[in-house]
Image 1 (cartoon, helix red, strand yellow):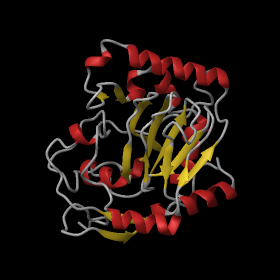
Image 2 (cartoon, rainbow, N blue to C red; image 1 turned 30 degrees about the horizontal axis):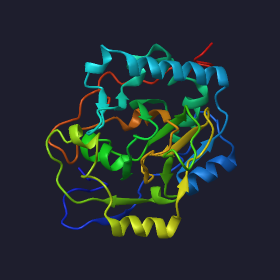
Image 3 (cartoon, rainbow, N blue to C red; image 1 turned 90 degrees about the vertical axis):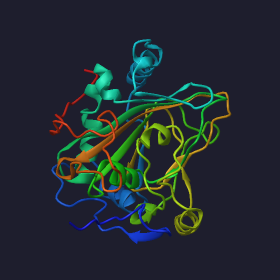
Image 4 (cartoon, helix red, strand yellow; image 1 turned 120 degrees about the horizontal axis):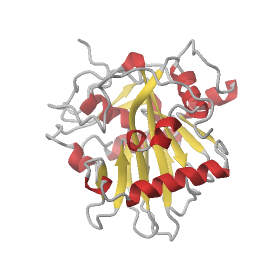
Length: 300
């Protein structure tokens, strides 16, 4: 079987050309304008402001707080904590732990964008609630999600898209997401074999499967840097291979977001390409995969 995106096997990193479409052809829906799809094709991301109303944002914020304060949930493996402070960094499988978020992944405002970009029915590969509190929110180092999903989860092709719902205003001060425009068209083949149960460390601080400085400098010199700044209620969609990361939040203002990964049903996970075992189901869904339904409004 041909492996299209080799990584974590060679002694030196490499920059490989993307072999998959960005905006897949013959989409079943038309959720984006031609200009928006051109922008996504060029940059690898698209910010849609004001997608959710204030009352909806408030309901999502309240549900995030409920997850954060749930004592039973606090003992579950889905909850990832910062290494030093033990503050909650992420809650994985958010759409399975919350009835509201279970409906939200099917909201037409989100799912139709994914179906448009991927030209297929979709399911949730991964979901999580991310927290970056004021003063203490830690960084997420530069990475391409697809490199990890390919190596450790067995995602065969670049046919997945992430969406990040901003639940607080994201400014340049409180650790917004940084992206490298155009980086989704190159695949950085990383060095370093995957340790067993790597996810236990990588979800706190990733060291394997991250770009080397020279490759990252090449991408940034070519595409520049962008900051996903916006008001609460905006949604950022970005390609699975777009290089991104975020700095620590030392401002007083917290930053939180909901993170949903839509994967094409034609791109279901295989055995990991560069890891000895699959990651847990709450990190990478592979059981009982079926297309998500479409809801006109998850809050109705």
